[in-house]
Length: 150
Image 1 (cartoon, rainbow, N blue to C red):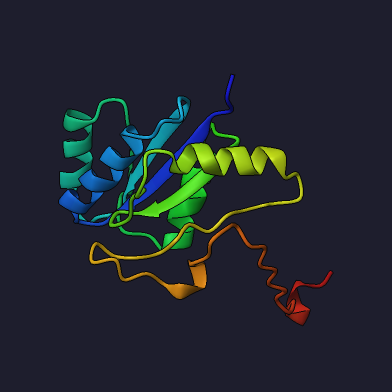
Image 2: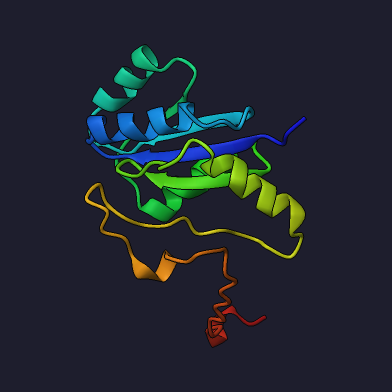
């Protein structure tokens, strides 16, 4: 059986954009996907819409808007998946095989901790940093502030 993959969205008052992201996840060929949405909006409109429109989606509502890293921490703590995909409410998969390809790559490369998907817009404007003919390793080494060293 394929490992569970959790696809997460942080929602903020953009229902139609979020719908496209959820629909792109539901159309994935990978057969073991959990969808989590954290509604970080100041109202509960998105949360109520999710409960009604997408009962298969696990929805979480914040009492008030929180910072994005905190929202993602809640999603990760709630996720059942072996791997977690982070989406914003205005992002989505572009091909039905995206999750399947990512899982296949991760499962066959023990030394890979994360993948970055291509970033672009509906008018095919893509970030060239993520444009390549094949998967390329990118290693970022960040300096550790002295306060983090124990």
